[in-house]
Length: 409
Image (cartoon, rainbow, N blue to C red):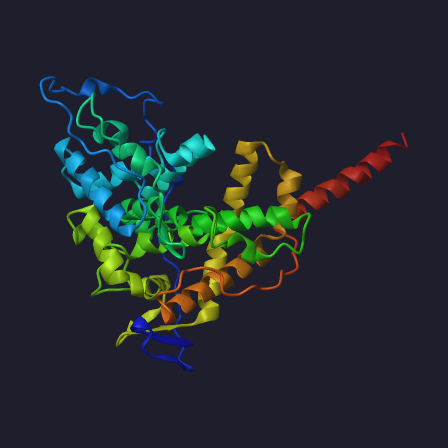
């Protein structure tokens, strides 16, 4: 059992045990029928009634370079959204989320061109993207401002080379937290709640799927490789920081172990961000570990490391199956035999990745000025035969026996 003092003032170890229970609940994948009813890449400007006599005076923004500038541009974006009738903070969160995930104009769709991913984000978040940010972030059809394009190109924000977060991950986390189902109900067979799949389970599970496929031909490929300090995929530092921010920004400090809707405590997104950077940043890993299952008492967090690792590994492994299967289908990059071979690595790689993740969080609880990244480098574990690989091997052996017999006739 590990015990860590809030803001790293005291670190102790004792024998007390705390059991962590996985989130209970269930949700049907077909629960959301309101999926992707969007109008393609064309922007319909007939929603505007531009004031022809009034020239546009909107500011032209530069790419965001630090956390202070992120807060400022989000405030400007909110002002424009309110001006265009989006007065409810939850709907503003949803609109900005659509810049990055779950819409036909999002960064993710531009990179992946995957309608199935858009549908998944809709189901995981518990809402479709209601408003087109390309329209709602302009004052009129003749607007000279560039709020949409600046936010689009500023998903990853670096305050310093070693202090950063992915704003796209944070904002989809805030959108997911608006839904009780996304916060609490597990998606069957996929490893977690919608919020988890939109953030850390999705990132690390995707990394496990990717690495398991590599392990088929390179058994020595290390799990630490999916935790780069630079880069933008899987367990990269900027991704993990965005994932933790997705939980901690706008939280209720009175109940640090609870995952709550940020709109119950804040009326604007930029205030959520400002509060996170100023008041929550140094305790972000502490709060996140509490939400994973650590027990907070008298400003200390008590946790059972091995239990956390195995619970996280189970979630990550389940999502890895979905990720790699969908990836092979969408990219036409493998068949059932390839998937079966990769599946033998899901469990060991998940355990390695989960161990790195939990150790990274513990390190940052103790040293909150340090980034969340890999601090350990476990040796690759041996693969184990999965249900799928057994089934494939059995079918293949039967086929070979039948073929041998048929040759006699």
